[in-house]
Amino acid sequence: MTYFEFTKRFPTEKDAIDYIIEKKYNGQYVCPKCGCVHKIYRLTYNYRNLYCNNCKSHFSGLAGTIFENTHLDLRMWLYAINLVIVSRKGISTLQLQRELGMKSYKGAWRMMQQIRKAIITI
Image (tube, rainbow, N blue to C red; front, side, top):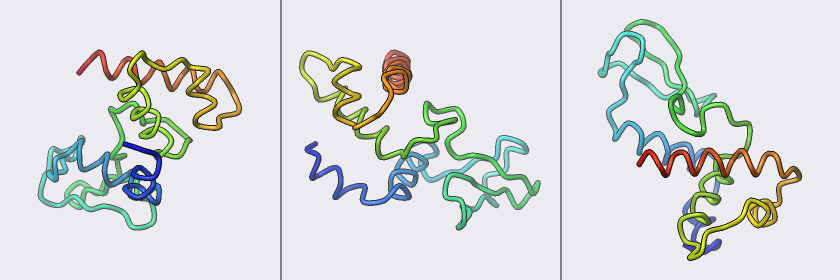
């Protein structure tokens, strides 16, 4: 996927969050606290969180994923995953840092480690 196609597919971070949550839950949200599947709603003011109307609890739709504690825009994560997957010989952390315009090498290194860990578990 080219950068143009990527930005067309994910114009906002909300689109990226919707994509990740849809892939994680396959349209069937499950409350981690009570196990309810019928009364789960997406919050309109915080797109990363879901609300269970059965037990009245909030939970992150990104919990249990590599995106769980990130403060970075999720489009950046998805584009990094795209770069790792489509590059023939792999991509170095330094190259990833340059491609994403990240200021710190440490942040790019952590992102790369999380992506590699996720790819290995697949």
